[in-house]
Length: 180
Image 1 (cartoon, rainbow, N blue to C red):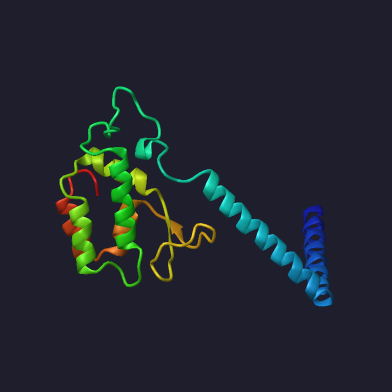
Image 2: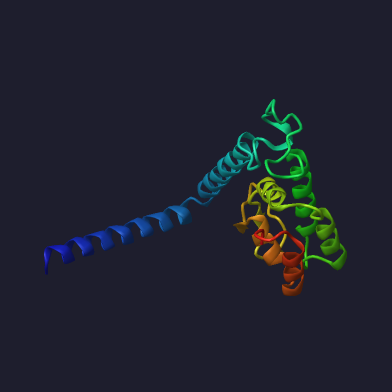
């Protein structure tokens, strides 16, 4: 038997022994295991809450965060809306798309109304303000930040998941060129 094969067998035996020891521990100490599991889960959830509070995913300049004296209104460079308006529109879009069974016709019309009269710079400001919220693969709803179930998707990816093919195409034709 070669030296590499001996090492491989030794590693496999060590892994098997570790697995057997772990199973035996759980069988012999179910309450201790449950306490440890709950403690680890609590630490993880606490970490997610602190992370969400300390470092939100939105634009630091949103809603007038860093006001430029040359642009006191906070107009998006090249755009027609302020950063605060971009945040408000992003929140509206999120609320219209965050539900079971996709987007209804009235919600789709509301999405178009919210995006009416914007230019390309406005769209990208709204997209930045939208961030990358998690979307549940099971329900299509936004997942809670502390569970992080699903994929973190951009605004365009949310559109592609929530809208029908015809609605997506209609929105694509409705928005300025170069957005989606």
